Length: 265
Image (cartoon, rainbow, N blue to C red):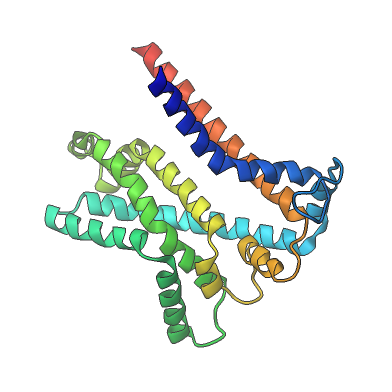
């Protein structure tokens, strides 16, 4: 009984530490006070101001465009890389696995500065653009896609691919008809992780972007030097609630799928 009490208390403290600031953010998104911590009456004005702020909406659109574009490219590249590593020889596989994990543990600021120096060396000063920014986010996200897809490849029955080849399928057809459908959950997880990493990134964005292209993280950081608009609270609350709904939907879908599998057995 005592163990359960302390275990429950520990979990509650951890969750409170993580989500209490977000809860306060959501609460104060329903008041237009300019002084944080002071309630100025319940209102939805900040949610209306979000869509009236053109600079903020442009930054939001740029962020979403960059996140999904880089996520698609990173998912394709990471999936191909994971499949290539998995079907390589054991010695080559170990080397490639080690190399693919270095960007994950490497400090992001090191990656950002190295990318900026490379782009300046190749393109010249003042030539940074959306392409360099996209490549930077792909460098950030691709290793995580590889890490998401690789476990699904290890769980897959290796005989399925060989059986497809024995039945007359070409290697490409066996890949698209057998391997990819089986590892699709890992591919989707890698895609969502790539989207999240891109949405959240500031350091690589700051070092590889054109000065006229602002993402949400860059916009918020620039505004902190002046006065952070109150509608930022409403926008952050909306983003958080959207992410919660996505997670709930995915978990609900996964539980329904597991129930169907159990019923079939």
